[in-house]
Structures are given as C-alpha cells and as structure tokens.
Amino acid sequence: MASRGNFNSRLGFILASAGSAVGLGNIWKFPFEVGAGGGAAFLLIYLCFALLLCFPVMTAEIAIGRRTNSSPVGAFRKLGFPKWSGVGYLGLASGVLILSFYNVVAAWSFGYFFEMVRGNFSIGANFSDYTADLIKISIYGVLFMSATAFIVSRGVSQGIERAAKIMMPSLIILILGLIIYSLTLPDALAGIKYYLLPDFSKLTGSVVYSALGQAFFSLSLGMGALITFGSYLKKDTNIVSSAAIITVSDVSIAFLAGLMMFPIVAYLTQGDLQAISQISGEESFIFQTMPAVFESLGSTLGVIIGGLFFLLLSFAALTSTISLLEVPTAFLVDEKKIQRSKATWLVALVVFLVGIPSMLGAGSSSFFADFIRLPGMENSMSFMAVVGLVGGSTFLSLGGFLISIFTAYVWKKRNFNEEIYYENEGRLGRLLRLYVDFAIGVICPIVLGILCLVTILNNYFGISW
Ligand code: PFF
Image (cartoon, rainbow, N blue to C red; front, side, top):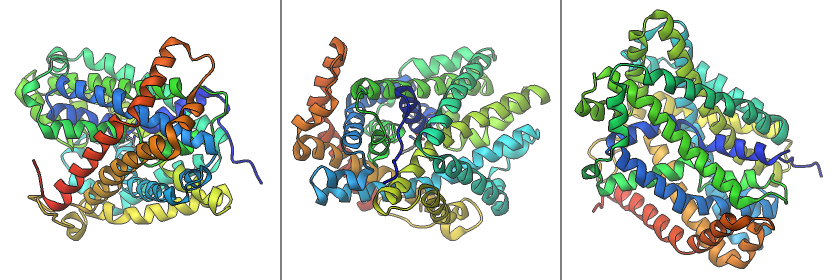
C-alpha cells in the first residue's frame, strides 16, 4: 500500500495544527466577541476554557490519530470499536459543512485584498452589493478553494507542512507589523484600555456560552481534524507538549488580533468607550468599517495597510481550510482507496457546490437569506447561519463530548495514557499529563455535554435559561 504520508518534523506538525486553529475565528470573530462580551472579561473566560477544557480534548484527538495512523472513521474501528465510527462520520459531515460556508467568508476576505490594493475603500459601504455580486464572489471562491485543494493534493509533508512553514511565520510577521502600526494611531490607548480592563458586569450566561463555543471552534476540535493530523505524526513525538504549544499559539494569536484591532476601533471612535463597545461588537465590522479606517490613512498608506490586513486574513483562512479539506480527503484515501489528488479535487468540488446556497444567501437570494426561523429566535436565519449552527456549533460540541467519553471510558484511560506518555517529559510535562488524564473523564464530558445540550435546546427548541 502506498504510504499515507507523514509530517517530517514536530515543528511542521505544530505549525500545521496551529494553522488549522488560527483562522477567521481568531481574526474575524474573536475581536467582535470580545467587543460584545466586556473586553478582558471575555478574554479571561476564553483563556480558561482553552487551557482547562480544550487542551485535554486536543491531546485526546492527537493520541487517537497517532495510535491508529488513521483518519477519524477508521480510527475508532482500528481501536476495536466499530460502532464509534459514527463519531468519525459526524466529523466528516461537520468538516464538509464548515468548509462550505468558511470558503465563502474566505472568498470575501481574499476579494477584499484585491479591492484594497486597487484603492477601492468605498467597498465597506457597499458590502452587501459586494457579497451579492455572484460572479465576483464565485471567482474568488473558486480561486480560494483551488488554492486549498492544490496544497492538500500535494500531500502531508510536501503540501500541508510546507505551506504551514511558509504561511505561519508570514502571518506572525504581518500581525506584529500591523499591531505596531495600530499602536501609533491617535487614541490607541483607549482601545487597549477597553480591551484589557475587564468589565465583569457584561459577563452574562450567554457571554460565557459564546466564549466556550468560540474557544472550541477556534481550536478546531470536535470533528477529528486533529485526529487526522495526529495520524501523520511520528511515534517519538511528545503529544502533550505539542498540544500545549498549539493551544497557547492559538490563544496568543487571538490575543494579538485584539491588540491589533482595538486601537483601530478606538481611533475610529476617537476613544469613546461606549462607541468602541458598540462598533467592535458588530459581526460585519471587519468588512464594513475597516475599509473606511484604511481610507482615512491616506491613499498610499491605506492601500498598504489595508492590503496587508486582508492578506493576513486570507492567510489565516487558508491554513484552516487546508485542515478542513484534509479530513474528508483523508477519509477517501484511507477508506475508499482513492488516490489523494483525485480525492482532494473531488471533495473540493462537492464542498464548493454545498456552499453555493450560503453564497446566494448573502444578498442575491432572499430565499436563502431568510432561510428558516427556528423556535426561540426572533429573526429568520440565513442558510449560512444554519449551516454554521448545525455543522459548527452543534456537531462540534457533540463530537467533542463523544470524543471525551470515548477516550476516558471506552478506549480507557490506561491506553490513552500509554499513548501520551513520553519518556523525558519533565516535571511540567508530567503535571500537564496528569491534568489531561483527570480532565478528559470529568471536566470535558460535563462541560461539553452542557454546551451541546444548551446549543440544542436553545436553538432548536427555543428553551433558554
Ligand atoms: N479553527 C478555525 C478558526 O478558528 O477559524 C476553524 C476550524 C478549522 C474549525 C478547522 C474546525 C476545523 F476542523
């Protein structure tokens, strides 16, 4: 049998996994969730969830993948529990659904890069015309999906690892450069204050709920992306410390994205804290408001800073779409014995087609824009929002809950521990491993079970607390 491929180095694995984690979730969604959730108060809760809850789940996913050298569906079977393959199929469905709408937002961002370079700053005010321009968005969407498929089709070390080694350092340089620049803007300090001084009065149950969902989505957990990446990992790699590094990298980049955005918002609102909270809490903030900010910097600087900003967003999205596409691709390669490049392009085509209603719902079709009104919701949801709710929030939390239960009580902790034990783990490593061992059977299933239950009851049945 042809080799499935491997990561050549631990660094490559860490960069690719951190690349999967760092995405639109960090740069597009995180700052506005912080904006809506009381600045640093949200940040603190987010941090706790990432470290205490997501890190153990990530360790479990990587361990399952590495033990079995198999993508999620086959992994559960290889461990001797074929019925649990359902969790793998759930992950597959989730990957296809998430990628279908994620590619549309990635296409908008990618298109914005060209618009900024052309100096078309009025695009922010015309955002809805832009997203309704089907031809344009389809072209950007096809280009973005093709870039993803091209990288994935080249295999693990030549494609995914190589791309991560180029894109992740570039992303960090871009973000640091933009932070330095945004800190020099007038009123930057007010933005930093809003961001870093917690306002606990804003911490409601729903803010805690969003922080949890956001942390889980941001770390790419619950759909087996890390089972798949773990399956290409060499046996002598320390899983616990790798998962810790990936978690900390993701949280750090989300934190840096806030440092970059809040001074810009403060500049725009001339330091008015009330306005900062309002504007940064808008979901469409990046697309609607940012271009005007870039315009105010003057034509040359605006083109440079605006272009770099949307390039950063596109890079972040691309390292994530790669991992989203890899999950169904690896399934076809492992289980259906389809050649990798064929499998990749086939999945890319199917996912693109699944994404068309999401694309249409963003302006050109009122049917897909007001697709459905679920019980308990005031307004109807767009097709894209429904796909995000089902494939993102619901399936991921359910998948994460099941993966924790599986690891602790079905596969059993003894086997899990054997896989994550590392000879020279050191004192901190041992402590982390013991924590993971405890959390995966207690904290993770309880909290993720609640997350999943609240998501279902609240959204599908309109029952809220
Ligand atoms: N973590 C990505 C983000 O924050 O944008 C999204 C994502 C990628 C979710 C890969 C799930 C996944 F498997």
